[in-house]
Length: 511
Ligand SMILES: Nc1ncnc2c1ncn2[C@@H]1O[C@H](COP(=O)(O)OP(=O)(O)O)[C@@H](O)[C@H]1O
Ligand SMILES: [Mg+2]
Image: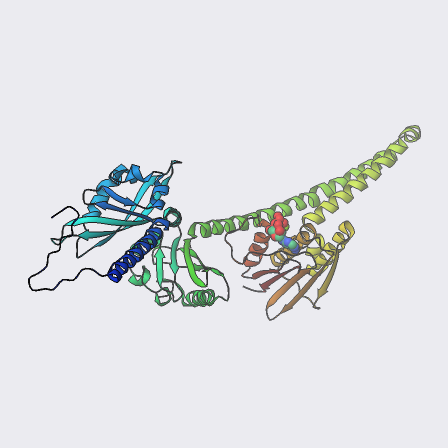
């Protein structure tokens, strides 16, 4: 046999004929098609944006596509034949190896997220889906990894985790008990203060925790008046239905041993059509007690002020008044007894002294009237209010109209004083805060109640519907209320910005 001769092994008994021309052509064609097909697949793999690599069981890289080279900024020759290890952070290698060990014919695919450091020094994340190829004895031959950059997703996840942690830490650090409800009232989050409240108050059923339903909770729990509980339930339902975004109210929750007050606020928020409701219960007992103390102090202040006014008016009336009169008489006597030549010299001085005494007497009367208008004691409330209205009109141009249901009876002196002072404060506020030009006072007495209503046409304001939180001093309003309540009466202030103010006071005539 010579080199190049064709060797054909032919089984015995088989006829063999030489290959024919068209068989060769067919084989060539098939080969060309195969090349074309391989070319197509190669292009497909090469032009993938996914990072494709293959590595042997000993981690040596056998294949990488262009995207892989570009991503790791290496030439193909630098990668093939080396291990894939430099593609990951060294501290992650044990974890990655452990994950790869899972690969088996029964579990041929494993997904691993690896970190690496980019040329600019930032941490990048790549997710590799690794498929194992095995020999007939189930030994791992090769792994093909298809990876894509998931850095942005990882960063977004990190931001979400940070935001969640921030929200959690924040609500846990608040003293208010907070829970978050889903559309149907299911509690999905509670804070530390909430858990603490339920721990301390074991009388409240257990469904106050995550998974329970807030709407079926025994409303506000033990010790809350039924009317208040119903009011809150109605407010919360309004928030859940979207009628309003927030609802707040104060309620009392007293135990046999302790008086406590709370402020509950329900607030709704919406994200892409989904809504949640945040419910917070804040213990405002300290604020309530402080308000109580303030009320007691203002009552004492009212009494002390009235007492001081009375005392001063009395001194002016009983002592300074008569003394001024005496001084006038003494001067007149001296004048009568002076020799004519002395009188000639001092006559003008006597004139001046007389004018001075008159002036001082007028001033003292004015101060007395301000302190405690004698008209109040002498003629009663309507007359005193008329006097006050005229005085204000003269001083500031402010017009006050007085409507009195006649005949108006005399009240007890302390009631007349209280109503007079309330009207004084209300009118002062109208001038001071409201830039009002006109006010109406109406006064009537019926069914054992005296009613005083003062309305101005000023700029009005938004009185806070609850007593907490309060930003401004409201001593004047507090004292007005205090004066009314001291007689078991009622004080009410109604106003809206731009709508003026109406103050209504009702006092029972007897108590
Ligand atoms: N008639 C009114 N018109 C507009 N605002 C008023 C009126 N009365 C009271 N206010 C508002 O209520 C606040 C509290 O009033 P008040 O208790 O009398 O305190 P003060 O007069 O010392 O400011 C005022 O500062 C003002 O903002
Ligand atoms: Mg005031």
